[in-house]
Length: 486
Image (cartoon, rainbow, N blue to C red; front, side, top):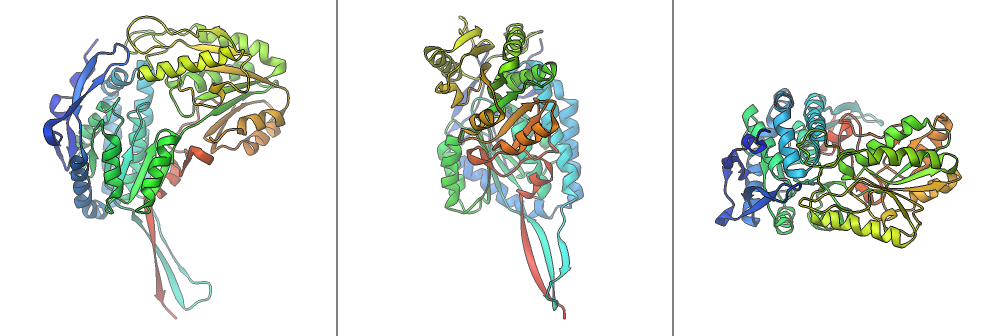
C-alpha cells in the first residue's frame, strides 16, 4: 500500500494565504488522525484570528483583478482543475480515505463527483448574462449587469472533504469571486491538496486561500465581522448554521446554508423491491451513512414490510467493516469517538423504548472508530433516532398503511432536505413529490446528488442552492442601470 501522505509534502500542510504556504502566527499546529486506527498522520497549522484576517487581506487584494479576468480564462482554469483532479484521482482518494475513513471506492467516487463541479462551473463561467430592454412605459432602457459579490468565506464539513469545498469554490471562481476556505479540523489535508493542485494549474495568488484551525469559532467570527467579507457559505449542522446566520446578519452578508437532514425513505407496496433495496442501500450506506442526505427513517408499507426488511437486513449483514484502504471493505471507520458514542446512544435509546435489533447494534472492541451496519424494527415514534440525524450506518424501519399517514410522519420534523419514494405508480410518485416538505426528492432512486442539479433544502435544512445554474447565481449581485433614451 502506497503512503497517501506522500502526495502532500510537509511544506504544503501549512496555511495557504495569498499564494504562499505559511505557518500560523506563533507556530501553533494540531494533529490529524486516521479514524480507523486513532493514530496521528500529520500536523497542520492551527490558524488564529490574525491568520484568518491575513487570508481576507489576500482575498480582498486579489478581488478586483480576478473579477476583471475574462470569463474564458476563469473557465480554462476550472477546466484545468477538473483534469488535474481526474488524472490524480487515486492519490486524492487515498488521502480522503486516510483522514476521513470512508472506503477507497467511495473516496474515488467523491473525487469524480467533486471534480465534476469544476467542469460544470467552467461551462457556467462563460454563460453569465445580463439583459437590455425597453422599460414597459417607454422613454428609457433597462440594463442589468451581473457582478461577483466579493470575497467569500466557506466553512466546509469533514464528511466530503473534497466535494463540499469544490461545490463552493468552483461557482465562486466562475463568478469572479475570491475565496477563503476553513475546512473541518478532522479533515484539512484534502483541502490543502486541492489548493496545491489549483496553484499548479495556475490559479492566481489570493484567489483560493485555505485556513486550517482548531479555533473555528473565533476565526470565522472575525471574518464575518469584517465588512470586506461579502458572502458566507456553510455546510454542516443546523445548530451551527443558526449561529453563523446570526453573525452574518450584522454585515448583511449573502449566505448559502446546507444544513442538517432527517430524510424519510418510503417504500410503497407497489414498488419494485429490487429497485427499492438497491436505492435504500445507497441512500442509507453511501459514505457510511455520514451524509446529510442519508436515509434517516425508512418507512415500508405494511404489505411488503416483512419481505423488504428480511432482504434489507440480509444485505446489511453482508457488508464488511474495516480500514478503508484495505481490499474488499464496504464500511470504513466513522470520523471520531463522539460520532460512535452518539450512534451507540441512539440505538440504546430505541431498544429501551421497545425497538428490536435485527443486525449489528453493538460497537466492536479494538482501535478505531467503527460501528457495524445495523437494522432495527418496531422503532417507536418517540425514539430519538427518528428525530435526530443518525449520521452513521444505522437503519430504523417503520411500517405504514396509508400515503397520508406516511407523508405526515415524513414531514413531522424541522428538517426538509430530501425524501425518497419507491413506487411504480406515476401519479402516486408525483403526489409524494408534491406532498413532501423537502428541497429534493428521489423517485425510485437512492442517489440524487449531481453537479448539474440544484442541491438544497427547505425549513431548517438550509438556504439557497448549490450546483446547477442556480449555484452560480448565489455568487452574483445584479446592478441595474436606467438609461435615458426617448
